[in-house]
Image (cartoon, rainbow, N blue to C red):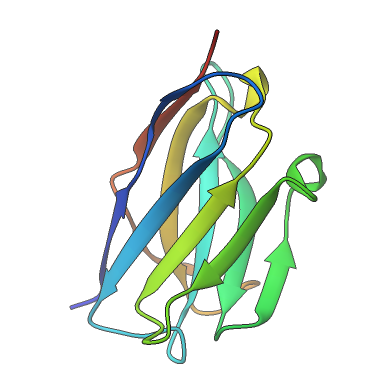
Length: 119
């Protein structure tokens, strides 16, 4: 069964870093892509970035380019979202999403994890 679980969220100050993890079960990045979405308070959910395999990266959100990076472990079953120089507007719930491809449809959503950037 395809499942994903997010971890690593929390409270940080502006300018600090945080790394989110998405642990996959029932598949690897050779089978599906994993994308990160986020939803800020009072706003609609938006796609951030996606990874297929280990190097096929799709950026959805220009506002995080240069600050966020995506990568996977060697087994291609855990995807990391490294978030540097965090800003208050990065606050929100971050979701790990299994997709048929970075431009494909969603197969499974994680429950989401809270990221708060505040001084």
